[in-house]
Amino acid sequence: MKYSNEDLDIVAQEKRVWGTWNYVALWISMSLCIPTYMIASSLIEGGMNWWQAILTVFLGNAIVVIPMVLNGDAGARYGINFPVFSRASFGVLGANIPALLRAIVACGWFGIQTWIGGYAIYQAIKLWIPGIATLPAVFPASWGLETGPAITFLVFWIINMFVVYLGIDSIRKLLLFKAIFLPLAAASLLIWALSAAHGLGPILSQPSKFSSTKEFLHFFFPALTGMVGFWATLSLNIPDFTRYAKSQRAQAMGQLIGLPPSMTAFAFIGVVVTSATTIVYGKTIWDPVDLAGKFDSPILISFAMLAVAISTLATNIAANIVSPANDFSNLAPSKIDFKKGGYITGVLGAIIFPWKLVSDPNGYIFTWLIAYSSLLGPIGGILIVDYFLIRKKVLVVEELYCDTGRYWYRNGFNPNAIIALLAGILPNVPGFLTTIKVIPSNLVPIFISSLYHYAWFVGFGISGTIYYLLQKRQVN
Image (cartoon, rainbow, N blue to C red):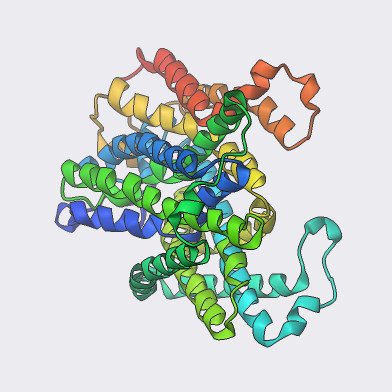
């Protein structure tokens, strides 16, 4: 077929073998990563106490698992992945729009994970070769990039690209290592926190920094949007995984059981450890790599940093290469395969300055997580409304791969989907521009700029509603 290749083809029924516990295991593996720890600890750094942070993480994941299960239905029912599923609503060619938006976000996550892994290597090398920390500056000051960390970032980036070159099968052993080691490492951090802070009592007694309910809510709603945004990527491309499901029950129950509890449990460790750093060091250390660098034993630190690097490598390939590789492949199925898509992801992920995205918790939540949720929320609204309300879960799969069927629309694009997408994105643009200080906040009415704090929800609701109104009378 013209609009297909091996990566985009329908998964044969006999190859759909994933059961409930495969999806539970997938989400445990996905959740146990350094960004999960950082997203929880950033809430503590932002001013929340322990239970406020845990509640925010749980609510965000309880919300995002709903579109996760809904979008997963098409993958399990028809054996199709996200780019192909998007063709039903956006058109055979128009599907490249949501696929590319999702792929660009994945590139950002790839860059963040690669920076974390590279910085872990830097922390280990610095113990044995202190001179790496004092290398002459070679980058402009505005980049905020020291030479030593830049070198290890490049080294870790090359390792990631080498794994892509070897192919996806090479990641299995790394995932096994991660599944065994990272829970042990997390438990060790928790034990250290309890010991160093003299029990859980002093940690849990750390007060909120907010002086009023209004001040708390001003931080809470953007933070909740950030929690939803954390998995907004996977809530779209979950068909990439559910197309291997034995049944709808397997993908639905597996995600419900696997995602919210895993994220909340690992977030609890991040919250406890971060709260302990305030007691032990007199300041909040929200980055676990920075925290590990403060331990006394060089051998222990080196081992911990190596483990962080390897587990980050495993997560990076599984979560941030597979899906964008499919998305880029959808652009030109006959020319771009998994490896080429992976290389494109790697290059884009390196040039977005990922070290700046994670340099402080406000940038991590308000600039990165919320910003991309404003792009992905509208796509989710369109996909779900089209599949459940317009088509009643009925797709003519063969026509998703040709230029003569109902999904061709106008020259391969569905104008209604594009209009709805823009309508969902535009209300969040003023708030984004004021957040990154491109325009002064006093030039934008507070009501308009505050919509950005609810970016995923605003985009999802507006785009879904407008798409329904435009499309409901035009479906064959």
